[in-house]
Length: 264
Image (cartoon, rainbow, N blue to C red; front, top):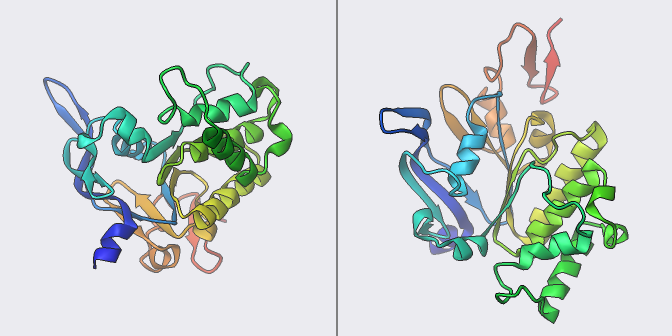
Protein backbone atom coordinates (compact mmCIF):
# COMPACT_ATOMS: atom_id res chain seq x y z
CA UNK A 1 0.00 0.00 0.00
CA UNK A 2 2.84 2.40 0.88
CA UNK A 3 4.52 1.68 -2.45
CA UNK A 4 1.24 2.38 -4.26
CA UNK A 5 0.91 5.76 -2.51
CA UNK A 6 4.52 6.64 -3.43
CA UNK A 7 3.69 5.82 -7.03
CA UNK A 8 0.95 8.49 -7.14
CA UNK A 9 2.43 11.83 -8.24
CA UNK A 10 -0.77 13.91 -8.38
CA UNK A 11 -4.17 13.17 -6.88
CA UNK A 12 -7.43 15.09 -6.64
CA UNK A 13 -10.26 14.36 -4.22
CA UNK A 14 -13.77 15.70 -4.88
CA UNK A 15 -12.25 18.63 -6.76
CA UNK A 16 -14.51 21.39 -8.08
CA UNK A 17 -13.19 23.85 -10.66
CA UNK A 18 -14.51 27.09 -12.09
CA UNK A 19 -14.59 30.80 -11.41
CA UNK A 20 -15.50 32.75 -8.32
CA UNK A 21 -16.36 36.42 -7.97
CA UNK A 22 -17.68 38.47 -5.08
CA UNK A 23 -21.22 37.97 -6.32
CA UNK A 24 -21.31 34.41 -7.64
CA UNK A 25 -19.53 31.10 -8.15
CA UNK A 26 -19.54 29.50 -11.60
CA UNK A 27 -18.75 25.78 -11.29
CA UNK A 28 -17.39 24.27 -14.53
CA UNK A 29 -16.94 20.71 -13.22
CA UNK A 30 -17.14 19.00 -9.84
CA UNK A 31 -16.44 15.69 -8.10
CA UNK A 32 -13.16 15.25 -10.03
CA UNK A 33 -11.19 12.31 -8.61
CA UNK A 34 -8.06 11.46 -10.58
CA UNK A 35 -4.69 9.85 -9.87
CA UNK A 36 -1.59 10.41 -12.01
CA UNK A 37 1.00 7.70 -11.48
CA UNK A 38 4.75 7.67 -11.99
CA UNK A 39 5.92 6.85 -15.52
CA UNK A 40 2.49 7.14 -17.14
CA UNK A 41 1.29 9.14 -20.14
CA UNK A 42 -2.20 10.51 -19.52
CA UNK A 43 -4.41 12.47 -21.92
CA UNK A 44 -7.16 14.86 -20.87
CA UNK A 45 -9.86 14.81 -23.56
CA UNK A 46 -13.32 16.23 -24.13
CA UNK A 47 -15.32 18.56 -26.33
CA UNK A 48 -14.44 22.24 -26.81
CA UNK A 49 -15.45 24.41 -23.87
CA UNK A 50 -15.96 21.50 -21.48
CA UNK A 51 -13.33 22.76 -19.02
CA UNK A 52 -10.06 21.04 -19.94
CA UNK A 53 -7.98 24.23 -19.79
CA UNK A 54 -9.68 25.26 -16.54
CA UNK A 55 -8.74 21.91 -15.02
CA UNK A 56 -5.11 22.21 -16.13
CA UNK A 57 -4.88 25.78 -14.81
CA UNK A 58 -6.26 24.58 -11.48
CA UNK A 59 -3.91 21.59 -11.25
CA UNK A 60 -0.93 23.87 -11.89
CA UNK A 61 -2.01 26.52 -9.35
CA UNK A 62 -2.53 29.16 -12.05
CA UNK A 63 -6.18 29.31 -11.05
CA UNK A 64 -7.63 28.64 -7.56
CA UNK A 65 -9.83 25.58 -6.99
CA UNK A 66 -13.41 26.03 -5.81
CA UNK A 67 -13.51 22.99 -3.50
CA UNK A 68 -11.79 19.69 -2.84
CA UNK A 69 -8.16 18.64 -2.69
CA UNK A 70 -5.16 18.66 -5.03
CA UNK A 71 -2.06 16.85 -3.77
CA UNK A 72 1.34 16.53 -5.46
CA UNK A 73 3.62 13.90 -3.93
CA UNK A 74 1.09 13.61 -1.06
CA UNK A 75 1.45 17.32 -0.22
CA UNK A 76 -1.38 19.84 -0.74
CA UNK A 77 -0.77 22.03 -3.79
CA UNK A 78 -1.57 25.18 -1.82
CA UNK A 79 1.36 24.48 0.54
CA UNK A 80 3.95 24.72 -2.26
CA UNK A 81 5.92 27.92 -2.74
CA UNK A 82 6.57 29.00 -6.33
CA UNK A 83 10.20 27.80 -6.47
CA UNK A 84 9.38 24.54 -4.69
CA UNK A 85 6.51 23.89 -7.10
CA UNK A 86 8.77 24.59 -10.08
CA UNK A 87 10.99 21.72 -8.91
CA UNK A 88 8.16 19.17 -9.02
CA UNK A 89 5.93 20.48 -11.83
CA UNK A 90 6.81 21.84 -15.27
CA UNK A 91 4.26 23.36 -17.62
CA UNK A 92 4.29 23.56 -21.42
CA UNK A 93 1.79 26.04 -22.85
CA UNK A 94 0.72 26.75 -26.43
CA UNK A 95 1.52 30.44 -26.03
CA UNK A 96 4.08 32.03 -28.36
CA UNK A 97 7.63 32.16 -27.01
CA UNK A 98 8.19 35.72 -25.81
CA UNK A 99 11.78 35.98 -27.05
CA UNK A 100 12.30 34.01 -30.22
CA UNK A 101 15.74 35.61 -30.58
CA UNK A 102 17.06 33.14 -28.01
CA UNK A 103 18.98 30.13 -29.28
CA UNK A 104 17.47 26.69 -28.76
CA UNK A 105 20.08 25.92 -26.10
CA UNK A 106 19.33 29.19 -24.27
CA UNK A 107 15.59 28.56 -24.27
CA UNK A 108 15.99 25.03 -22.94
CA UNK A 109 18.44 26.30 -20.30
CA UNK A 110 15.64 28.49 -18.90
CA UNK A 111 14.27 25.26 -17.47
CA UNK A 112 17.15 25.32 -14.97
CA UNK A 113 15.99 28.60 -13.38
CA UNK A 114 14.60 26.97 -10.20
CA UNK A 115 18.08 25.60 -9.49
CA UNK A 116 20.49 28.32 -10.61
CA UNK A 117 21.91 31.07 -8.42
CA UNK A 118 20.40 34.56 -8.37
CA UNK A 119 22.35 35.68 -11.45
CA UNK A 120 21.28 32.58 -13.36
CA UNK A 121 24.74 31.12 -14.00
CA UNK A 122 24.68 27.54 -15.27
CA UNK A 123 26.84 25.00 -13.47
CA UNK A 124 28.46 22.08 -15.27
CA UNK A 125 25.64 19.92 -13.93
CA UNK A 126 23.03 22.32 -15.37
CA UNK A 127 24.72 22.22 -18.78
CA UNK A 128 24.85 18.43 -18.64
CA UNK A 129 21.11 18.26 -17.86
CA UNK A 130 20.28 20.66 -20.72
CA UNK A 131 22.34 18.59 -23.17
CA UNK A 132 20.65 15.41 -21.94
CA UNK A 133 17.22 16.97 -22.58
CA UNK A 134 18.35 17.93 -26.09
CA UNK A 135 19.45 14.35 -26.71
CA UNK A 136 16.24 12.86 -25.29
CA UNK A 137 14.14 14.92 -27.70
CA UNK A 138 16.44 14.28 -30.70
CA UNK A 139 17.06 17.96 -31.47
CA UNK A 140 20.87 18.05 -31.47
CA UNK A 141 20.76 19.55 -34.98
CA UNK A 142 18.70 22.50 -33.69
CA UNK A 143 20.87 23.30 -30.67
CA UNK A 144 22.47 26.48 -32.07
CA UNK A 145 19.52 27.73 -34.15
CA UNK A 146 17.50 30.77 -33.14
CA UNK A 147 13.95 30.02 -32.06
CA UNK A 148 12.48 32.25 -34.80
CA UNK A 149 14.03 29.87 -37.35
CA UNK A 150 12.03 26.89 -36.11
CA UNK A 151 8.85 25.34 -37.44
CA UNK A 152 5.92 24.82 -35.07
CA UNK A 153 6.81 21.14 -34.70
CA UNK A 154 10.46 21.90 -33.95
CA UNK A 155 9.53 24.57 -31.41
CA UNK A 156 7.20 22.15 -29.63
CA UNK A 157 10.06 19.66 -29.24
CA UNK A 158 12.22 22.47 -27.83
CA UNK A 159 9.53 23.36 -25.29
CA UNK A 160 9.32 19.71 -24.23
CA UNK A 161 13.11 19.68 -23.86
CA UNK A 162 12.89 22.76 -21.62
CA UNK A 163 10.38 20.92 -19.42
CA UNK A 164 12.75 17.94 -19.24
CA UNK A 165 15.62 20.25 -18.28
CA UNK A 166 13.49 21.53 -15.40
CA UNK A 167 13.82 17.98 -14.06
CA UNK A 168 10.39 17.62 -12.44
CA UNK A 169 8.48 14.44 -11.65
CA UNK A 170 5.37 15.84 -13.38
CA UNK A 171 5.08 17.52 -16.79
CA UNK A 172 1.76 19.07 -17.89
CA UNK A 173 1.19 20.20 -21.47
CA UNK A 174 -1.76 22.22 -22.77
CA UNK A 175 -2.65 21.16 -26.33
CA UNK A 176 0.92 20.22 -27.43
CA UNK A 177 -0.20 19.27 -30.96
CA UNK A 178 -2.01 22.52 -31.83
CA UNK A 179 -1.09 23.88 -35.30
CA UNK A 180 0.75 20.66 -36.25
CA UNK A 181 -0.01 18.43 -39.24
CA UNK A 182 -1.07 14.81 -38.78
CA UNK A 183 2.47 13.40 -38.94
CA UNK A 184 3.86 15.84 -36.38
CA UNK A 185 0.86 15.37 -34.07
CA UNK A 186 1.65 11.64 -33.98
CA UNK A 187 5.38 12.35 -33.66
CA UNK A 188 4.96 14.61 -30.61
CA UNK A 189 2.61 12.23 -28.81
CA UNK A 190 4.85 9.25 -29.61
CA UNK A 191 7.79 11.26 -28.21
CA UNK A 192 5.83 11.94 -25.00
CA UNK A 193 5.03 8.23 -24.72
CA UNK A 194 8.73 7.37 -25.07
CA UNK A 195 9.81 10.00 -22.55
CA UNK A 196 7.30 8.82 -19.93
CA UNK A 197 8.67 5.29 -20.18
CA UNK A 198 12.38 6.20 -20.38
CA UNK A 199 12.44 8.93 -17.71
CA UNK A 200 9.71 7.52 -15.41
CA UNK A 201 8.16 11.00 -15.35
CA UNK A 202 4.41 11.50 -15.23
CA UNK A 203 3.17 13.33 -18.33
CA UNK A 204 -0.34 14.79 -18.59
CA UNK A 205 -1.51 16.59 -21.72
CA UNK A 206 -4.81 17.98 -22.98
CA UNK A 207 -5.71 17.17 -26.56
CA UNK A 208 -8.40 16.95 -29.23
CA UNK A 209 -6.51 14.03 -30.79
CA UNK A 210 -8.63 11.41 -29.07
CA UNK A 211 -7.90 8.65 -31.60
CA UNK A 212 -4.13 9.07 -31.09
CA UNK A 213 -4.52 9.32 -27.31
CA UNK A 214 -6.44 6.01 -27.25
CA UNK A 215 -3.56 4.35 -29.11
CA UNK A 216 -0.67 5.81 -27.13
CA UNK A 217 -1.74 6.62 -23.56
CA UNK A 218 -1.70 4.52 -20.42
CA UNK A 219 -4.72 6.38 -19.05
CA UNK A 220 -7.25 8.92 -20.26
CA UNK A 221 -9.25 11.48 -18.33
CA UNK A 222 -12.53 12.04 -20.17
CA UNK A 223 -14.47 15.23 -19.38
CA UNK A 224 -18.10 15.55 -20.38
CA UNK A 225 -20.98 17.71 -19.22
CA UNK A 226 -22.03 14.85 -16.91
CA UNK A 227 -18.79 13.78 -15.25
CA UNK A 228 -15.02 13.46 -15.34
CA UNK A 229 -13.74 9.86 -15.39
CA UNK A 230 -10.31 8.27 -15.63
CA UNK A 231 -9.37 4.79 -16.78
CA UNK A 232 -7.37 2.85 -19.35
CA UNK A 233 -8.40 3.38 -22.99
CA UNK A 234 -9.85 -0.13 -23.33
CA UNK A 235 -11.88 0.16 -20.13
CA UNK A 236 -13.23 3.55 -21.20
CA UNK A 237 -14.24 2.12 -24.58
CA UNK A 238 -16.04 -0.77 -22.87
CA UNK A 239 -17.80 1.70 -20.57
CA UNK A 240 -19.02 3.68 -23.60
CA UNK A 241 -17.23 6.82 -22.39
CA UNK A 242 -16.62 8.10 -25.93
CA UNK A 243 -20.11 7.43 -27.27
CA UNK A 244 -21.67 10.59 -25.85
CA UNK A 245 -18.73 13.02 -26.00
CA UNK A 246 -20.13 14.71 -29.11
CA UNK A 247 -23.61 15.08 -30.69
CA UNK A 248 -24.28 11.92 -32.71
CA UNK A 249 -25.78 13.69 -35.71
CA UNK A 250 -22.40 13.91 -37.47
CA UNK A 251 -19.77 11.64 -35.89
CA UNK A 252 -19.93 8.40 -33.93
CA UNK A 253 -17.37 6.33 -32.05
CA UNK A 254 -16.60 2.97 -33.62
CA UNK A 255 -15.66 0.51 -30.86
CA UNK A 256 -14.22 -1.95 -33.38
CA UNK A 257 -11.65 0.46 -34.82
CA UNK A 258 -11.35 2.45 -31.54
CA UNK A 259 -11.80 5.70 -33.43
CA UNK A 260 -14.35 8.32 -34.45
CA UNK A 261 -15.85 8.28 -37.92
CA UNK A 262 -18.22 10.49 -39.89
CA UNK A 263 -21.75 9.23 -39.88
CA UNK A 264 -22.99 8.17 -43.33
